[in-house]
Length: 217
Image (spheres, rainbow, N blue to C red):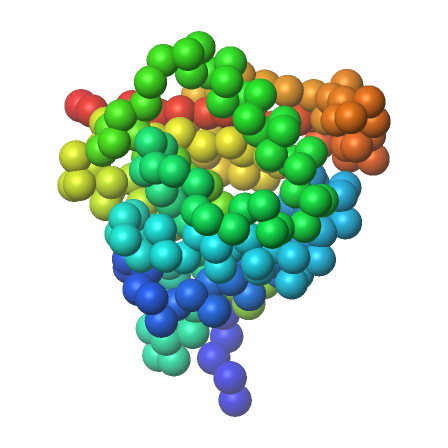
């Protein structure tokens, strides 16, 4: 008989290259089904997986991403894809589905207002980018533990600030519990992309919030 969820042990550690395919599939499934902007533009699992795979080389090189695994089997059941805020976008972004364009547009507006033209320097700011947890371990606090582990790891690496774009009320709640503060917000209802209300169908979700947290004592 399979172990009940409360008896399953979960371990948290730094992403390794062999996690790439499992992470792509997990985040592809999670975001295409549950993240409001991805749902609004009808991104498929495979389209989102392609995005994650583009990021995997950078994730490996930077060593900032944290994953959750079942202790007994090693199955990947959660991931918090994290990058250095100053790092460049990976090659191949132009080959992604055009469905991503309105999502990138609204998030870039958040970042532009937040940064106010100030340069971002390598090694200073963590960008907590994509957070996803398998339905297999829902309700176990895995997302909170991933954030906690990520912040501890980044602090040990000398990072002084953590930043995220929380695109739904669940992630906003998770990050607020971790001490993140909302700095800039956009509205799904009023946002226009090429003159279209792309996110009108998710207006009840409010809008994405750029949140940050100081990692210095």
